[in-house]
Length: 116
Image 1 (cartoon, rainbow, N blue to C red):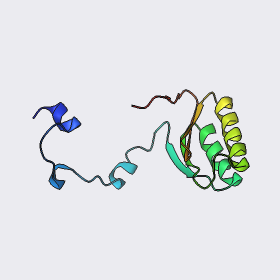
Image 2 (cartoon, rainbow, N blue to C red):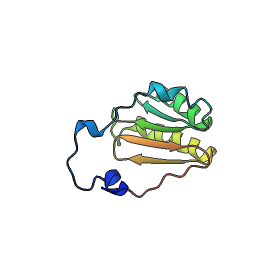
Image 3 (spheres, rainbow, N blue to C red):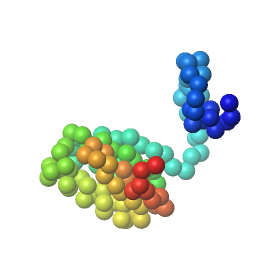
């Protein structure tokens, strides 16, 4: 079996022994000097936007869960407007993925609108 078959999963049966569980604690200390982090956030109220804005201003990438709000909710409209302004100010990017996520990218990062 070639390397591409192993990566793409072409043919053959897989067992639990084919996979290795990674302990994330082994990797946490190795990347202390990273340039950008990816943050996961939940937006439940207007006050949840503050740490998201701070992270984007600091050059970090944020994926925010907005499932607590419907897309027609006035609160979420204000939140999205605030985050759009932040993305403009830092020359970043922002997209809404479905009805449940907003992705905000910092300076120099563009979010593709095409699925892989």
